[in-house]
Image 1: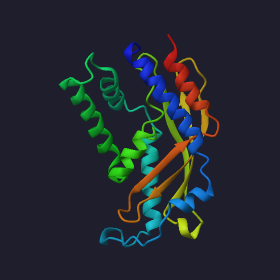
Image 2: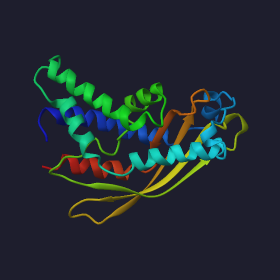
Image 3: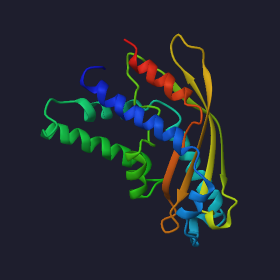
Length: 216
């Protein structure tokens, strides 16, 4: 799966790696600026579960989606959308792009606001460890452990800090574990994730995936 897709994916993956490493170190000052406090009313179905517990469950569901894979259907769709045809304005190419967008929404809209999905996808925060998967250079990532904690800043109670450990395996390589950090910011209006960043202080995992994808 090289050819016309390679340069495009290199640019995408390089930008994603950069974003992942930078965004994992968000400052406390940035947290306060982004937040507006308000109450989110409980529904009758969740009356016995606190907002904090519900939000933690939502973030954990996203981590299960994001840090286990690759999702082979997503890989097929992104390959078709990013490099499929000679004419980027053809009807088929537009259809491929729409299928990819629909699939991303199907997977993430249960947990994100519509704007939240669009922003997270545009900065490479969704399926970010799966963009370089090729079926002839297979690898797997698996969520080993995670911790999601509500911010202890009173004016940032809609923010949740993430720590996770993932295991990376690939043919001919020893399994390795990598630490992931991030943050989810909930919309106080919708009760869904409106902002999401996930990445590594040490970009070893991204480098392994990048190098594997570039092997001949």
